[in-house]
Amino acid sequence: MSRTRRTDEGHGSLGSKLSGLAVALGCVLFLGGFVWGAILYQPYTVPTPSMTPTIGAGDRVLAQRIDGDEVRRGDVVVFQEETWGDLPMVKRVVAVGGDRIACCDDQGRLTVNGKAIEEPYLPKGVKASDSGIPPTTVPKGRLFLLGDERSGSLDSTVHLDEAGKGSVPRDAVNARVDAVAWPLNGMLERPTGFAALPGGLSEPGPLRLVVAAIVGGAVLILAGAAYGPLAKRGSRKQPGRRREPAGAAR
Image 1 (cartoon, rainbow, N blue to C red):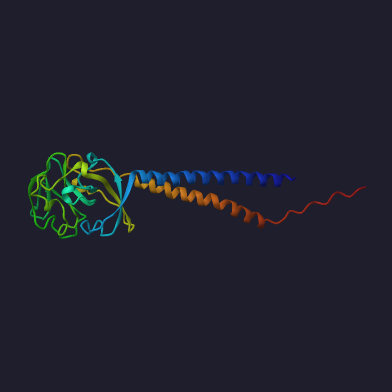
Image 2: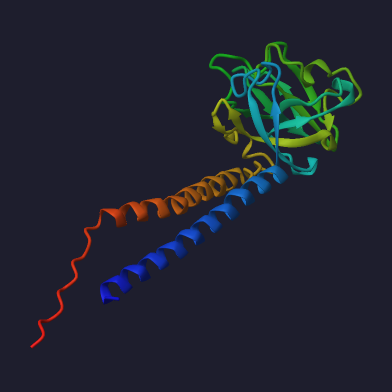
């Protein structure tokens, strides 16, 4: 066997090993990403337009499973409260226990603890509340929630006369919405209007890392699986080497 042929076989063996390693690593990332995502995230379909324009009716969202104590102002959450119909609902948290909320100031803005809140997710020219919100102190351990479609959302403003002053307990929250999965609108932005208030904003969940693991794994699987057929095709195209004639006998 010639030295050139042994070198070619060595390269082929190394390539096959690297190909197998890429497929194995890709499977780990791909399946691990799906399992990780399934543990952390729950998909929901939003049935009503109460969160438009952020989330439309029929949109499919991905919500990270969290404890109610992790909720911050500005979060879009999935919750279930018996006095609200005992069905999963999606609303935005605009005030937490101890906050004093009111609407509207002379520019039509919501105020929390006397601070006007800029809400860029609302359509331009739309007031933070059509009917207004009288100055209300949110009870401790509870959340005040509004839909982004302020004119028709059945939210805390329609429950103001109840014992909780329109609020729901923190433990009613099941998850926090991180992204709109369908249509592909991507990650929800954290509203900076609440950033200066005590507690600040929540940190986005690891959804981007989950997606990166799944996509990266798929790329490695495809690349590794494609190596064999491409290598065989390349070897067929190489011209055959001519054997040198044996020396003439004397």
